[in-house]
Length: 262
Image (cartoon, rainbow, N blue to C red; front, side, top):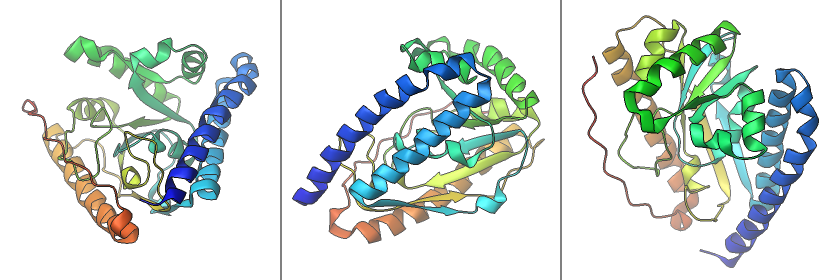
């Protein structure tokens, strides 16, 4: 690991957090505007973060398959390796909303904007009881023509870790009657889920073929996992070749045992 990577990472993290505070304050007027105002503001913030990351750390982005994104209401299922995709993916869609844990809605300012933007919160502690209210809010978002972004594993997973997809994604798919757009990526190689290092190179994001609605839940779930994991593995291999000896060494987590799909 070079001293330049450490210095650039420290500089970026400082700029990122200061910039976040500035944008939070600047966004306050959007609380009195239509919902689309805060969505546009968040998308602009995400694009600015990508610019800072490229200029300060030398971390670029390669988008693949953008032409595959359908218009209209959509369920988006993305691989989750770092905080990077929580802001970077939003600008891909016309009117995105994100499924996030309920505790984030309690954060001052951030929670206000999340509610204004119509984000979908889920109470993880409620287990299966959290699914019906989440489905109701999800259907309301689809009725508004929105694109609902879900991280099927529920939390960040290290690059190369065994997959741990949650059954909630199949529950939403079955209740929405819209296509599901899988997204593979290798962001965790360049922006780890823990630590502050930001590596130079190219984050690669691949939009896969939309999965049509009305498939059997079990068939959908297995297909989604297989397609995202295969594409992600290829992107990780390409990213590791690019990083060479500077590639972070990550211990793969064990996959959790999940219940059968009804």
